[in-house]
Image (cartoon, rainbow, N blue to C red):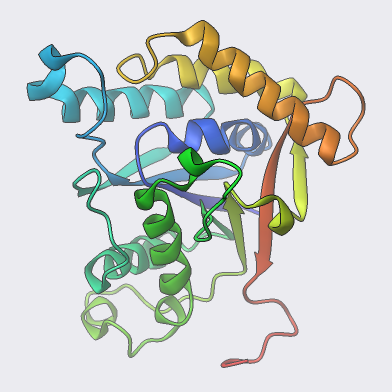
Length: 241
């Protein structure tokens, strides 16, 4: 594995969902990129921030990404709360995947998680659906969005899709991030516009990570992030099947 592209609907989604795993990958020399679909302009709590919330959230995301070793953050610039898996969004996803050609694409799960409706924000579901649709068949089909092929973004077959925020019944892999939890929490702390009670936030995050580790049968005291891993193109894959 050389390169990973991780998508989130909003600034801070990836920090809550996968920053520990990302920190471990980056420490191993993997080049990690973030793709942020919306500007998070509907977020925040302070009315005084409205005029500058987009710039503030982009700065927070860049700083948080730096905490866990991310190489670059790419902003797609869609409005917060209005994201849909349209062909415009899918084309932007295809362009970024074809440009970076990652070994793993990480995205939010497109299925609603009824155990935590907050994890299933409509933008999260739309982001996951747009990425999943973009990966197959459009990213690997040179005749899908032909203007991308003409612009030099050649078709590419994604090997792996890692989905986070999955319903419990879909989880098939957990990553032990016990050694990376402080880096993850540092990334979360950067998002000051979103989480004024950082103590309660960190308590919630640690409890969730501990429960995930326990459900994954890791050692007592371990902390973990959960994924639904899908093999998109393996050595056995036949095009169209």
